[in-house]
Length: 270
Image (cartoon, rainbow, N blue to C red; front, top):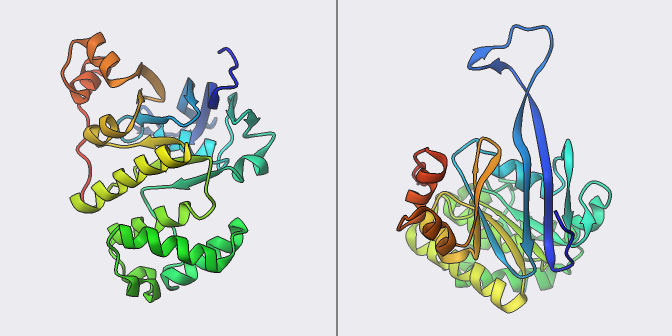
C-alpha cells in the first residue's frame, strides 16, 4: 500500500491470530496448539476527517481491528499506523490521540456517573470541572436527566450507560474516535441523537471516525466509505453508491449478501 500523509489510519496486511480450543467445530485434542486468524491480511486506509464504516457478522474480526487500533492488541503481521505513528512502536503517543466506545460500556458500576467521569478526566489530564461542564452539556443534549449524574452507574439502563460512555470518550477531544457498535441497545430516539452527535463531531472538529455497526441504515447515513468484513478478510470496500453500482443492488444489506453469500444479522435490541 502506498504511504500517504492524507491518511489518519493506514492498515497494511494486518493479521491477528488467537489460540483455539476447537478445530473445525471439534474440541482440540491435538498436542500442538491450533490457531485461527481473527483478522487475515486486512488492508484499508481512513482519510482525515472521514467516517469509515466496518460491517460484518459476529466473529468477522471487527472488534479485533478496533482493539488493535486502540493498542489493546498487537498485530502478528503487517502494520497499523495512526497519524503516521505505528501502534506497536508509538503506543503511548497513539493513545493520546484516540478514544474508544465499545458495545459494552465499561465503568466502575458502584460509583456514580460523576465519579466515573472524574476518574476518566484525571486519566486524560483534563481538569475535572471542565470535564463535568462538557459532559453535562452532552448528556443534556442526549436527554439524560441531570440528576442521573449522582446515580450509581449500575442503576442506569444500558442505553443510558452508553450515553455516558460516549460523553466520556469526548472529554479528551480525540483526533481519532473508534466506535464499536456504539448504538446497539439504544432506543430509536437515543440512537438518532447519537448519530446526529457523531455527524456534528465530524463536521465541527474534523475528527476521523471508524464505526462498526450491524445497522445498515446507520452505516449508510454516517459513513463515507464502508468495508465488508467476513472471516477476517475484507470482501469489498467503497462508498455506498459504488458498492450498489458494482453489485446492481438497491441497499447495503443486499450488497453484503451478494458479496459474501451470507445473511446479515439483525441489530440486537435490549
